[in-house]
Image (cartoon, rainbow, N blue to C red; front, side, top):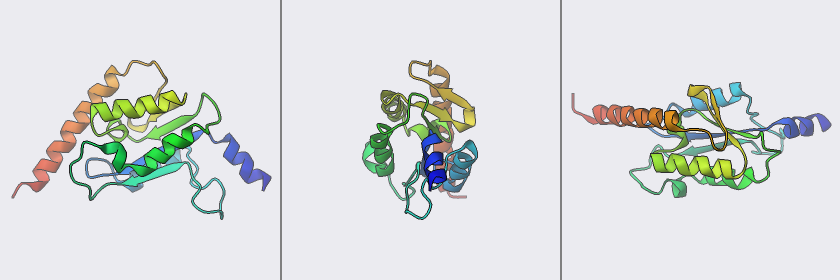
Length: 159
């Protein structure tokens, strides 16, 4: 029992995974989070106690109220207050996985930073601390969003 608890205490990583047609597959995001070091179950056999927060919004239509549609992310924000220290980190697969619009992404980043956590973006291999310059992040975010919207548009066009 001590070994399991020790692993949980040493773990300072959490991951937010979102399934959506604009984003990489849920499975790919989970695999990347595991490879980065997010444990799947902190307490095996106890149930779904995990630092992996998964929302599935693949069937969701258009919305401007993303926070209301991502309940597990809201749980994660509440649980960030239970963090282990200022070096805690939250994994997102890509800039677009952080937020579906620039405003949404900024709100997510601020919510994580307000709890003194850092944000790790897998595709950029970048770790962002409170106060870091996010100009390059948002440049890539805008490009990812535009590319995802174009892929979606082209997939709906008659062939």
